[in-house]
Length: 483
Length: 97
Image 1 (tube, chains in turn blue, brown):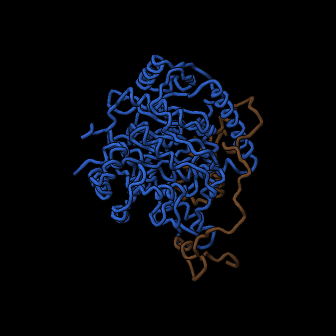
Image 2 (tube, one colour):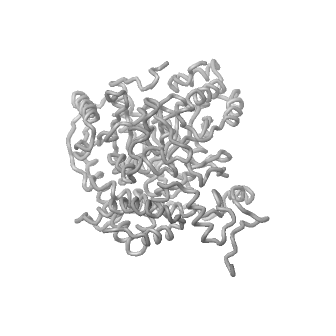
Image 3 (cartoon, rainbow over the protein chains, first blue to last red):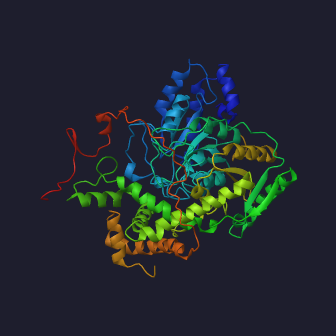
């Protein structure tokens, strides 16, 4: 079997233009990869018949953009017309969307080929993808380890080189944390950069779709086509069109970089801190000015996140009532029983816990004690970040406090899943862009990631630094060593 | 919160419209208590500003024109309905049940 999909997109694009390969070659290779690696459980639904049909339809079309005929995997909380979208839940086990999310329309306009829908935590609630109704995806670096979450299936399939591109979503680290655990590039863009229309909502003021890729350039290029104002999402932002790849490869000399002191305390494993410090030294040696700073209330970000995310989730998931779509309890005595038994049976434990706590947070006087107060402190966190960006170009830290842990570890503690994201959650609180770039491995050959945070709408500068680190470290990020 | 009673768990489950079996209540009680202890930490935070951040984007008056656009076809919209009768979505009897 040929290995065209291991080539960079620019090379694949050249081969397609020269008619040396056909779109069908790429699609067949992707499904062959998925079949050989089905133990990874990276996909919930495959789009095989449609993908093959589309590949054949594209055969005689002009290769008009970098992404033409490139296989892409889509996280299963993004609606795809006529292709099952489950959110990894029994509740939506048989749900077939009747419209495409705006990002899917953009992907189709660029003639990318959707290969399938990737595994995830149920309704994106979790940090390990183990809350999936369809069983957890696995980490290609060690199949006994978690792939992270909630975009664990997308991370797993990019890491294992099953397909070159995937979409993830990030409410509290769900793109960057699995990207760190699996050793790939994952970007959560600025809140408002990408339309959320057609993304099944979890925490509406936090959710953002983003690209997950093997390298920095392809990540930036994919973001180029995903972003933009959408009339169907009021929170999407109208901006001048820009090219996120434009600063890639530029010299980093003179960049001002800050490290929040909280990101390098003893909550982070020693091996991760070592790799992080090596990277900091590399940046200093190459002319960056690096300083340590404080961000107000950063140590409270997880608490605020729990309140805001669970509160918003309880409201968003009220729509699952067994009436209009999704699982429905059969032969209920009355409407109340239809609601409560549909939700008892249709949702998994993690989702039910979060809805219940969220309902409590938003009820009566509690709304003031918890939700209102969280929003006020959230404002302080954002202001503190924005103030830091008056002086610094970027903020960095480790992406995670540990490397990927065993699939069987930490199953009993409902707080643990929030703590896994302690270093990435502050970015969602502030609505800023953040990216994971691999910076090495621990002694067990498990990936370690660097988190680069940018000012709002300044993804370009993040890609500039990330590309420098990628080029300088030149890590082999293929778990099978590039076979 | 000092403790979470069985009745409080049942109340929260009712608010959330989630039925709990008797044998599951204690398990949920322990787990919810843990999460509520987490979020209770917010009570210790002092000296914050009064301004709220409801969403991290700055809204401009950027609403679309009030015109009828493309709408979902009725048959399409009904495709995922679990129980329907002709043109209607079927629900259990709500009056004089």
